[in-house]
Image 1: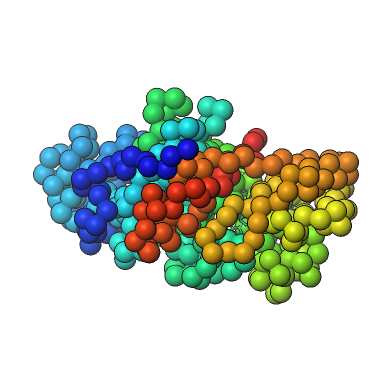
Image 2: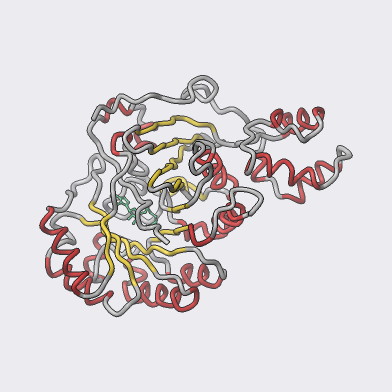
Length: 387
Ligand code: SAH
């Protein structure tokens, strides 16, 4: 399929147009600060909620469009704040499956990515939590240059709002969130929880907790903290190997943690929340997909209330790995099923727009266009978020 894609949002949000604003994004202004600012202009505190509702529920993208606010106030707001602190650097759409991908430029000029995935009447947002990633998984594009910083709660919410604004009449709203973009979500847990609380607000995006999946490299203390938060979020743990020796080669942070401690924390998460844990397993041809690995993985997870998501590796420019052979993937599936472990292979989506998180951002930074990178494929991760 051709990768000569329409670049949407030309004009105001066109690449190279520079960053729009140094004004603070209103979604990151604490409510009490906004109320004090409003009070200084003789405005009642409820105006703060009106502004948020306009952005989160009514799809307002400018203060001027907030028709329930007095005109002079709209102008004052526009002079002091920005509705969005990010700018759309690129907007790609894959007509084959209606996947949208946004590369957003942050106020400090960094780039992040987020994706809207359409499937079975669902509209799933895949969002980033950090600029880059500090976990260093050897096969992943996002961690190649390390982590730069955590995203703010407002920057996470902005990804959701911008993607929701692309959802048409059916279903008209975002239905699911997968926190599987760039970064390690549990390394930015406070901001993530703040953002997800906003996402769950009935008067705003109204996304139920059970429709949210958080994917982690496996940080046991943070998994416990997430369990203690008393939410119904779904947890996905990136296991990628059944033994410490192999996992440490693939996931460097494993040195300080180890598979047993991760499984213990995940078991506790299940005991505390009643939510079944998903184990993600990126299948790297010739590295973690031989029959011994299949048997070890089945033994490790049998008897646990676990679900496995097999993710055939998606090529990343310059990395020396390969996708698994069909027979090896089949053997993994069969071995797990025979052991009573539920398993799915993650579907690919948005292949022609290179949906593998981190790759588009890297290319944008290197000044390459999608046309230069014809033939690359993307990965997709809405699939396991079945509830
Ligand atoms: N830091 C979190 C979120 C990462 S993205 C985590 O480690 O889970 C979500 C999933 O995509 C992870 O399982 C990650 O290992 C996987 N992934 C990253 N790069 C990939 C690639 N090139 N091909 C297939 N899966 C990949």
